[in-house]
Image 1 (cartoon, rainbow, N blue to C red):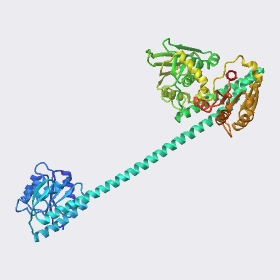
Image 2 (image 1 turned 180 degrees about the horizontal axis):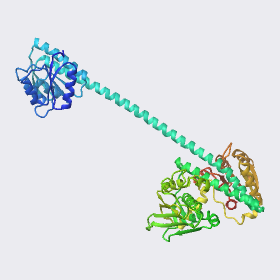
Image 3 (image 1 turned 90 degrees about the horizontal axis):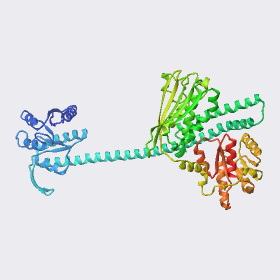
Length: 598
């Protein structure tokens, strides 16, 4: 039917008109385009097409008006008209019938539907020419009476086209429903995948945490034992040469322990597993602790170490004292390490210390050391970077100290900067804002931290006693430790202080001994990480046993751990331990802890 069939397309949108023209020409129709009703009227004065396809909504003459003009003209009144519209209400059908349209197609339309519609309209047109049948109808629709003067075949065509439109809309609706269903299924699967990914990430984080805890213990424990044995040897009467050897062993061990601690801290920060405390602390005390570590090295190198704290700087603050101290130590360590003459200055001043508001403090560590080349300064806070290629060989270190400093300062909400001149020295400056506290709050926080386990429901503070050293020979301690070296170290120390003791190599053995004769012991020294049963599990089991026996005074359990942060402390607290001593053992701290609890 397409051969020699002429079609007039009336469409005010050039893009849609051209698209429709290309489709029809491709299927063998001769197509003329009119960009509006007036232009279509002009074309119809020159030729009569076989079919007219017209948009309804147009600016000059709309599709209904054009239909009436065509039907009122004797030359064009029998030309089939298809209304092309985005409208699809029953009123459109009635208006189409009244204006004399034969058919309508709703936008967007399927190309195949349009082509088949044109084909059967042309076929029906031949039937109309052979069987004309006029019909006048009065009908009521939507509360109004309508007079329809159209041929029966025209009415049927229009109603069939509305049926086709309904089918087309139904297809589109089904496609939309299917697409929506597929989208919902995709979103459901995506959500499941996301939940699975989160779960796997949590499991990976937990596994990484366990690995870091184990590697911390496995690396620090033997080093702590070496340093502890070196401390014992240092107290003995040794020949000068042997004394020097012992001192070297201790210094090298502490240096290696510091580097391992830096590596582990960096790993925890990098894994997002390092958490900051928020407690009241004494800033001056942290400065003194950090600076005192380098007193001997400063003296040996004949350097000057100046500590300058502005009088406006509050002494008592709220934050993470241990991590702030670590920042001080890392920066002072670098300054002292790379300075061979002159000195190091540690300055603290106020940027903003308005009463009633958090204090913003500026910290400066200034040295007269080797300085840092300009082209190296921007990389200095990156992990594993040292400013001088030969620095690792000359000074040692991992290149992690400044990276850790940068990340800790950032975690505390601060900023850090560097200025340096090669051969003249360097200045590291960082600013952090801290809430201001009071001396009483710091004192309470210190007591709370020292006795943090006492907050558990089954443990109470030890009563104040007179000099406990007088009764040490009556006290028996259960040592729970899997390391032979640490067993020997603890045994040597306790024997020198006059304590009695018994050994258990793991938590399970400790629980058995306590169950059988727990009343023999006055205190338990509990290693945290051991085979068979660790210290946390053993402590929890002992506490449960005491609870079942209604024990009036639970036995003090002191944690001994090679862990390196406050998370270990909280884990000890949760298990029911009374106190916490970090390895390597410091005899003074160890003795004070035992005296407190005995």
